[in-house]
Image (cartoon, rainbow, N blue to C red; front, side, top):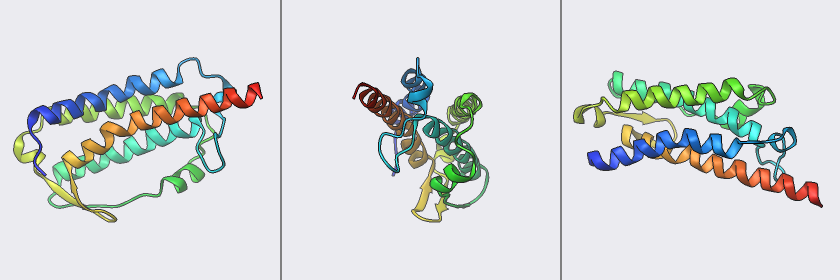
Length: 163
């Protein structure tokens, strides 16, 4: 799929705006809200923050491989295994910093790509064709979706406290 420069610019702006969206969703969060699971099997805001950092760091590598390597194989990863094994009960500050930094460094790189670089591809182990535009479409929405999830978890924590 070919996407014009204006669409890429809009996606890149949405991608960068995800930083502020997550920060706004976390503003004033209480310890109780941070660790509230809105439903069985659903992540708490703390776990979401760690997931965002991990996902973004995986994305850093994926993006660079597609730009720098010819036709790289892009392996999948199991986000639930990451959540179980990477101690998602730890403080969130460093994960927030990693998330923000990864987004900024990716945006800096994406802003410099020429048309030939935007056309580069790899192959994802689960989904097949892996493009830079597809990567950006996914990640542009990712933080916004999780910010909404954080807000829902906080609202659920408030409801359970009032009950």
